Each structure stands twice: as C-alpha cells, then as structure tokens.
Image (cartoon, rainbow, N blue to C red; front, side, top):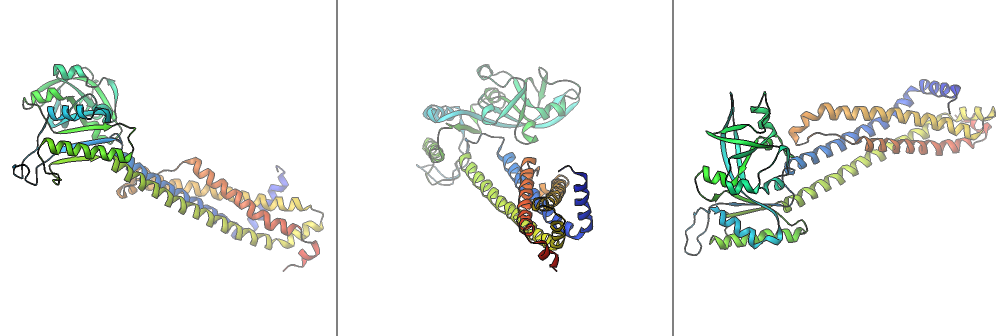
Length: 409
C-alpha cells in the first residue's frame, strides 16, 4: 500500500482522466456539502426552540389574573381579579402533593443607579423557589432565602448583565444599589439559560416589594412546577384543576376564559418536542436521500471507469498481473478521490454554516452547526459505498480473459 510506484501510477491515472475524476469527486463533494448544511440548519432550528423555552422549567405552570368577561353569581362582567398572599397559600396548601416548587411574583420597573452609572431594569419580587422554576444559576453570593421574606430585608440578586452595565470598575457583590431612590444590598449575582434579557433582571424578596410598593399583600402572578412524576395527561388535568379552584374562589363563570389564565408548559413542551422530532425525521430522510444519491452517482461513475479501463486491465493481465492487484489499484483510486472530495465537501458545508449563520437568524435558525462526528460518519459511509461500487465492476473486469479485454472497444 505504501509502494511509491503504485501511488505514482494512481496520480498519473487521475491526472490523465481529469474529467472522470471531477465527475466522481463532484458527486461526493456535493452530497457531503448538502448533508452538512441540512443538518446544520436542523440543529439551528432546535437551538432556537431550546433558547425560546430554555429559561423556564419544562414542567412549569404560570397563573395570571385578568378581567371577567361574563357576569357570575350576581357579580358584573369587567371585574378585575386580584391575587394576594391568601391566593398563594390556598393553592400551595390544597395541592401540595402535586407541587414541586411554587412562587408568587410581583413585577416592577425601576431606575438603578450605582455611582455615575444609571439604567432602567425590571424587578421581580419572588419567593426562594423562583430560582428553580426560572433555572437561575448563582455565580456569586446567594439567592433570596426564607429569612429575607420573614424579615422583609432590602436585599437583591442581580443578573450578570446588570453587573456588566453598572459596575464597570468593581464587583457588585456586597455593594448597595439604588433602585428608584431606595438602597438595596446585592447578595447574589446570577446567570440564566435564557437570552441576555433574562440576565438584566433584578430579584428581591416578595414581602419587601409588598411593603415598599403599596404596603399591601397583592401579587401579580403565581408560578409553580408540578411533580415531575406526573405524565402529560395528569399534568393537563392538574392545571385544569387549578383553573377550576381559582374560578370558584373568585366567583368566575366556568366559561370565562379571560379572568383566570393558566399556562401549562407541558402543552408547549409536547408541541415543541413533536415539531423538533418531525423536523429531525424530515432532515434525516433528506440527508440520507442525498447520501444515497451520492452512492448511486459513485456507482455509475465507477462502472464507467472500469469499462473505460477494460483494455488496460487486459494488458495488465497479459503481463502477468494477478486479479487482486487489478482490483486493488482501482479501489484505491476510487477511495482516494472519495476522501479528498468528501473532505472538501465538509469544509465548504461548514464554511457556509459559519459565514452564512448570522443571516440565517432572521429565519429563526440560531447557531447553525453540525456535529463533526456525524459528518465523518457520513463521509466514511460514502467511502465504503464508493469502495463497494468500485469493487464489484472491478472484480468482474479482472476475471475477463486478456484476449477478450484487449478486443474491447
């Protein structure tokens, strides 16, 4: 295999038959390039879905209040539903077995100031369980705890982007941040699996916000995660049960869809899972269809190559070359062309994904890329297929008698 004369002969054959080489090489190059691009786009779409839904737990339920659209129990339509601490306690106590984590939420917008730096941010006042519902990772310090709630302490946990924005020459942990005229001590810095906007949020204890912003026990939203052991149907039944309980608690008509809004991530997760699975199957079928087309193309070209070299094979046999050596040299040439063309196809495909990736984001395709192992496996598949495609006609040609081969036109 490492015979210099053998490789010289192979390269001479390739150089002599450039058109034939280009035809066989282009088939492989195009197949690998298209395979790479297709799977890169599929991965980009999956990345988009992951980012869109990745900042919350997949078993999360979000409960919001609205305005009644129908009269009920003598109460007029247009009544504003207001959640409070008792609403939270009622949900938690009556559904404790099915709840994993639960928090109330209050939403505020503030102007944050540290020394000469000022910017506007969203504040979420929450319970400690919020950390696990929102998939928040603490980089420094700690998260809000139960003692903060009990003592109504003026402490906050800020996102890493808030620190980057305001604390240019120092670290934020332990410092005091002015939020619309009130000083809060920073006890933690977090990062989030969602986008950068999630890391520009400030968290504070729920009871602190209730005392500072209104001196009441009102809340804007209740978020929870249900027991992960619940299957899809049980999760949907649980969210329906919560809806019924809250409608009964606030005297809301059963058919009123606006007063109590319960959003269950189970439905979204199932839809996204079905969509990504379907997309993956489609891309897989198209990708393997492309590879099959490449295999067929290589096979046809190899048949043509062997037929074209029938006289050459006859001369080799007449000079005493064994059939194995004839088959080997044809196979080696076929595999060499396939490897080079496959590598070029891989490089071109990955270059298209890399430099065309930013423009694909407008079509909801984020970070389009493909696993190198997958492409190497596809290339090896084509190499093996090319070898088989070359072996069969070469084997048949090597068995022809020299006199017959020499007479071939």
